[in-house]
Length: 433
Image (cartoon, rainbow, N blue to C red; front, side, top):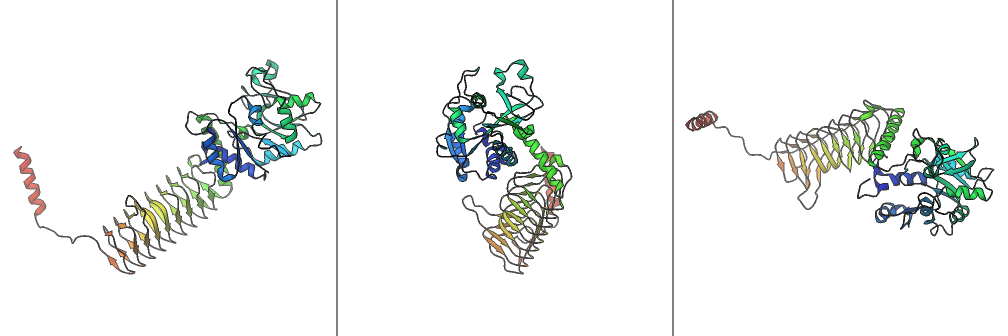
């Protein structure tokens, strides 16, 4: 990845790829989860610490079999089924994992279950040689494969399932007499075969087991995920005017009869209720949008934003940690931060809640039905009462009582003829040069 960030922590749909995988694993209610990591251990441990996941360290990278053995000590008292997954293969579904476990408990009691796939370009993937019933004859790494074996299209994803007592006993016998001098995990299949036990392969779609080893592959997997999410949104009753231009996050929640115009981006933590319209070129992150609300175009909603039912923000409005009450509106060119705007209030163009003094944040409260004139600066902490009116161009530094008018600007004066005399004077100066 050519990055200071650990590969498995690079985000997909706004979430580290490793956490996507762990979320799918959690659907199986595992007795425990162990992550094996080499370099960048501190980053991974910090990312998974809230999840109660154990971390095992692989000081030397000596192959996939060697990697799995690093979890043996953590699982020393565990008796049960072990799923072996890869942090850079994030979108394996819980259903596929369950199929692997179910096959492990089939009538023929295979020693191991391998997840296979058939990519369009098999390339350098290891091959799985199996019969029509999925019983594996042998598995071979591409480097060690013959031309005939390389012609096989069934490839090894690297994902496996085995019983704990079988797995570690077989791994203890794996050697490194191969082209790469590594301890290959698939060798346990052949070792089991030497003991007279069969192993089995089940297949899945190649997109599900797409590995990510570069930023280009990361972008490709992101695109596949987004395409599926867009289709799901439309299936669920959302209108996407230009689907290919809308980007969702992993947890975007959308109601029915929502309309999303082109070039809208959803960051994490966004919930959209029914009958909401998101106009073009809007960016939402950590926002909760109520029923029938309207957003944008060109709106920026940051974490902590709440728009209640029927409220509206328009062109070039930014909100952060602010609540816009039922039916309230801020139609143009405003910043609302650390604020509460009451039901039916109107925020004029160019209004700013001045919430930060360089050291601390302060709160602004605007009452129900209040009217804030254009180009007003509300210097927090400040409260504008219900039904109050703030005249355009005001800088408000003190509370405004309910139903009062606040004017904070100098009296307008006019000097007759001044502009004409000024122009004549300046022209004369210019001609004198």
